[in-house]
Length: 293
View 1: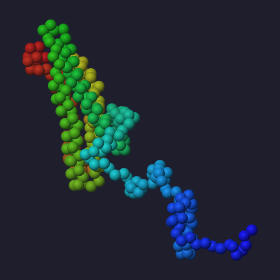
View 2: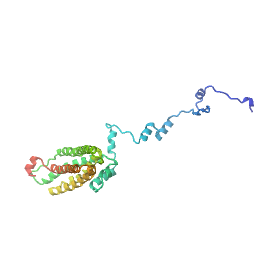
View 3: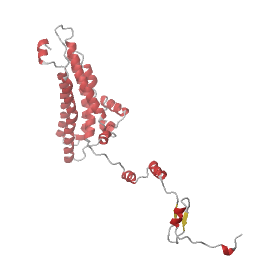
View 4: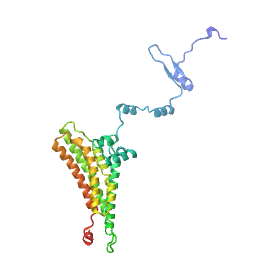
């Protein structure tokens, strides 16, 4: 057994040198009363700690963005920026289509279906489908009219696709752009006007055109009276969606300006409907003169 005199403290000159000689050792530094103790582990914090940070999301930039309440938006020239406009599920698209087919009086289409997540997916494919429906129905209708005539030779009119695409997409983008600019201008003149974003207006116009897809398919029926009845039905449904949606945005304005705005919206919609019907079922001039279309 060691004697009391053999027990004494030994002072080590350099703790860092000791840790270098024995990597597995743990050193404890006892500091003064005013200093905080430090614990130095021989094993460095390697990839395990970094993986924990990644799993827990302990990143300073992420914390800053979360505290700010939102993530940074991507630049408009990147694909990620436009991808957000197509971030919509099938249920939302079908629900908005159903809302455009069954307008509810007193219910705002934007607030009820669009405002939570406006998209371009539905309007883009609705316009594309409508373009081909108009072009195909026009070609088939002309074919059925002259079916059975021995001297008639069917020639598909592919130019109707390009012309229909120009008309439909120009209407679905330029008219909402003009309406959005007008509402922004009136909003600066009159307070308490309901404001819509450009994307919301494009969304309303795009979904309001859906009813013309089945209508254009039924335009194959050779009777002109049936076609006009179908156009009137589609126009009344889609026009009511537009009127009930944009009336709250202008009703606080001057009465004449508000009524003129709604009348202009419905009138432009009527011109599109009637124009598509008349143009899609018109033959080339030589064919019309020959077969008396």
